[in-house]
Length: 547
Image (tube, rainbow, N blue to C red; front, side, top):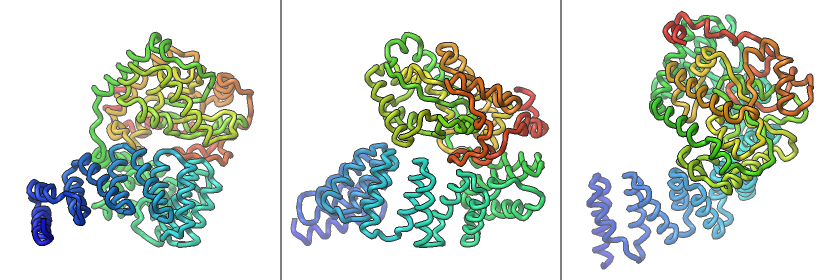
């Protein structure tokens, strides 16, 4: 095709594309997509069209061709990696950046993007190395790199290094809000209440509409009558954030917390209801029957015969703390972390992540899993855990919904020690309803759905206890706060640990707490949360009466 004819045909394809006549545009692009000097432009047009229409596999194929045609292009590599990441092919995305960097090792933005992928893949050392390379190559906006490194070190439970990174970011740009906000979060996690509050206020002085900081101010302190201006600021912010549904949701939860502190329970309940109605809009509806079927399959699959077939020979005895969210698991972990032999791992997502990568679809995949696969999975879990805590004697994994995986966990680690935290049903259900929970916890925005999930969790736990109860100890929250020493002594005995009085002074620990209970566990044991549901019974009478 002569240059003039090509130019006319390509212009026609672009015009069809701009007009939304995508079938005609694709036909024109395809006719022009032959090797030659204009191939890049044609392939780029096709890639745009495929992305626009959600044809991701065809977009990937076209972008692969583009990265071969223009192997030094960061733009095409980034677009390709972004789609691969979107469909869960993180390893492939990483390999494309690695190929680009073999050709262009001095491209700081590629190192930065690769660091993000390594972080998502939990390859923290690799991510840090790529961030270091981006800094060495003098990437623009270096404060963003330092802030990201702070988040990374925080996830690695290295609070001092995280602090250093945030401070470096703020040396470059004292008004860089992401670093200020992440640093404030770190200071909450290590128990530095005053420092966190100061940083949130500093952010609001820079940007009065930074709604997340305003919400965090309500959580970082106990609200009293003297804090009425903060309550009014929350109310005004809810009205102002009409176009930001997620921000409004967070602000409504924060207002509920503030009003609960003030013992204005009816108004607090109204705020929590508003928050959860917004929460329902960002999650698919909870499917009760589907969850019941999943529990049925776990019970049916992970029976004694299955366990005998797949159980590994591991002698490791990790400590898992699980149960419902808001059932006291963070408190139990912090109590254990007071023991010199125990390191608090927090809500590690290693096991669910490995399950998603290796055992999808779950739990159906368990039916045909092999002992060798589980041995490898258990080994990888242990390696990643030891990478975070290389010198720890005992590490707790406190991911509450690991109760779903206890059959698998028992097969991975026959000598596992499981701490099951349980709480009064009404208190537990309301506490979930009062908390903005992310992820796939779509049951958490409706009290009846929460109660249904709670009942299914009890049904599953009863099966685990019947099948390998010797590996499980139950810690009742209300009993713990009523008689802490005998409960903690029994817990330590179950774990094979000697009594240590420091376990009862857990609130003095400076360990990182990365859960919604960040401030509750900085207080000495109290009984204020036991029976809390009675404050709200008049406003949810049907729910309270039916439980």
